[in-house]
Image (tube, rainbow, N blue to C red; front, top):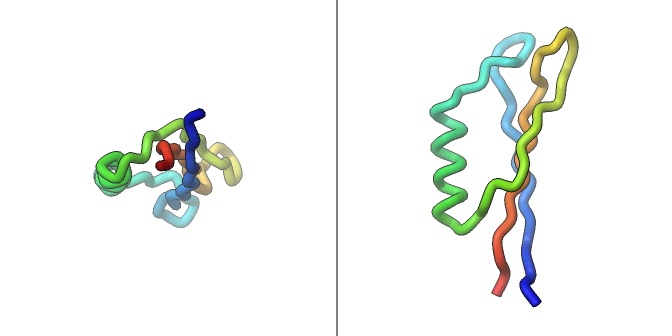
Length: 65
């Protein structure tokens, strides 16, 4: 039977009210995790107020030995 391990990573946007996501930084981190064998399964934003993003929550998985 296949076994998996999971990792939850939170990315916090910049700015006083949030919402300013630095795409290049997130992309670099996603590529690094991908090189370590992690696969992005889901990513969602947690809203703060008036539609601004408080954080991005990303869930990864990879097979265990």
